[in-house]
Image (cartoon, rainbow, N blue to C red):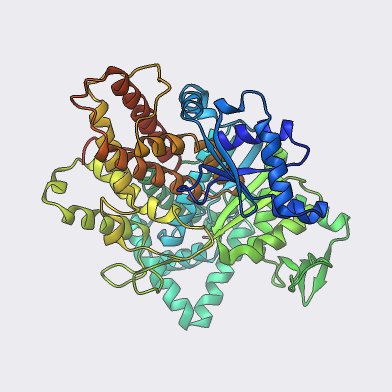
Length: 556
Ligand code: ARG
């Protein structure tokens, strides 16, 4: 909030536009302005002259002494430190303004994340989509936007055809189709189809007939979906991930015809090697963007087709400003094609966003495996995480299921969300389940520890003008930087900005805690001030952790 306020103040007074940023040399100053170099080029003057000019103007602002304690030019940079009373004024603003002063936006956004495939076990990639998507949704909502979250199930693809084939060949009656059966049948069939072309063809044929409306295949598809969706919902419940809509590839089939007609009427659909395709290349492309295939030569529709039909449906129902997708980065070409084809067809003019994420690797740097050595289902991964956390300390065995679930969530979410989304990251369960280091349990533990101090105290509503020492000042300065961190996360759709912020805040709070002891303090003003500051710290940590899907257990 301080950089925002200073920017407003300075840009009202100066004849050039400057941006105040957090100092990267906190030993020298609190904030800095680096613009003299850019402006020097623009105005054909020396950076020094410009920086001095900026400083002179700032020094002349009315009452500036109450805000700035030191301002100087060092090597063309403007270094600024603020007064303690100004820091306190902003701490109070953060504490008393709704949402800590985060300013509201009011877009309507349809989000598409999760994307599990019915009949196949959820894997680690689906974990990322769910965790990242849920967090971005919470961030968007916190900012005041209207968000509609759709899980977009994969429920009409080849995997269903394969499972139907298995059901029929195993002679399974309806009531013999269970989750256990699906968990066994899908991997078996997928193995068989890799080796046996003829069986694969038969499964493809079943899939196509199902998509064309075959009643028996659709009846079986219903049974498979019901069982599988129940399991998927259970996992999402444990992850505290939720959706407003459970639409799917299958539901998109209702709109394919409409989209096809639009494409045909606009002359955008043409035949290429027997398939029907839409050109999406643009002159400015630096790499080749191949046409989007709308319909295969055998008449079947594809992933891109159902995505376009879904976009058409979402536009008609919700008229969103933005449509935001969270998937593996390897799907980025797919989305480029779908987005371009949709805009060309004019089925929406919403802003499309695709946030692609990297792979989860094990400590060996290869795609993550469980101790049993297989590519894990999501359940296996969550169970293993829980086991490792429990094995860390004798007392962990006695924790309630609810608390353990909160901790497992914090381990996997904090590990994931601290990264730049597009990067691969190494999920080292052992490291991320420690209560020290940049981990979820460390954050939870910090909150619990601070809460204990506040437990039997009455929280003051006033803050004096004093700051008592360096660690105290650092903590308060950090509090004043929440809005900036939040907005970066919001604008870039990148929860890691919030993670970094709360991790720094927790570290400052721990430094504070080690030096400044509240218990037994005689100085009432000091005691009140510190309780005030710790209380707002706990509130910020708790609320921001909630935005990345982490709750605080009852004890640790
Ligand atoms: N089911 C897909 C997968 O497992 C993800 C779906 C993403 N959403 C979408 N509208 N295509 O890769």
